[in-house]
Length: 63
Image (cartoon, rainbow, N blue to C red):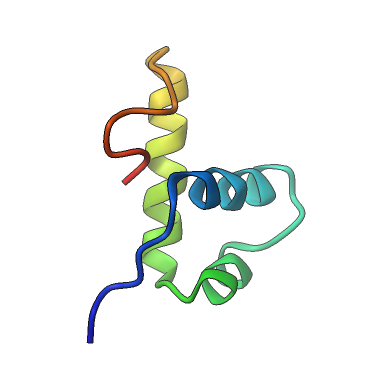
């Protein structure tokens, strides 16, 4: 089975849902048909990017 490809825009949307307290990590994982670990990685990457002052967008997006 192939991995589900989630767009950069959807990852940012998902992370914002979580950070704004609108959805749980588990619910976001279900919404996007990905693992809980994937959602946690998106959040960690997003926060790391913001902390380091880098652009949220890059060639590969948030991975």
